Length: 174
Image (cartoon, rainbow, N blue to C red; front, side, top):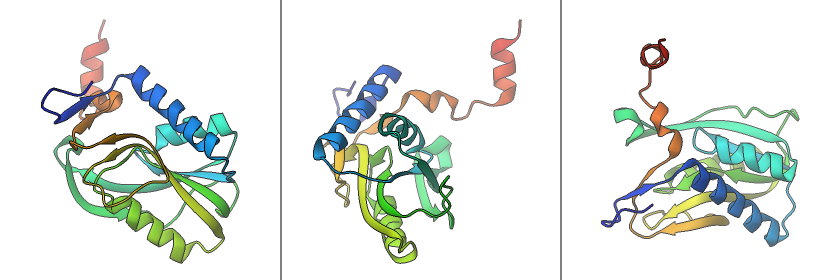
């Protein structure tokens, strides 16, 4: 649900999963056949996992991080892992790159540049996200929602940001 001021978007688990299913439909209807899904951890892990199951394709994982400060609300320096974890040895062929959103576009630009220069076995690369913000300098190949007002997206699993084992013990103490 988008707030009236357009500054916050609150997403439930059901809405989140429905958006991933709509993303799968967009990719399917494009007719593009790919070999592997490469998700960007952390944001792309859930969509990547679900798309991997729907399309019955192997899931590769690349870790990236830029939102670490203030419980994940402040963007800092972008860190990109040097290695990709994949069940098929080396990532190759046609790859669908999956993340949750194109925010500023910086991460997706940087990852694609790195993949194109360092992973020459990739023959074709397309990108898929749930949300694209109006401020994004990157236009994904597949996206479900365009957010012109650039709201902060409150995803359903954010409740775990800042939740410590000690707080869980307090919550579940009998």
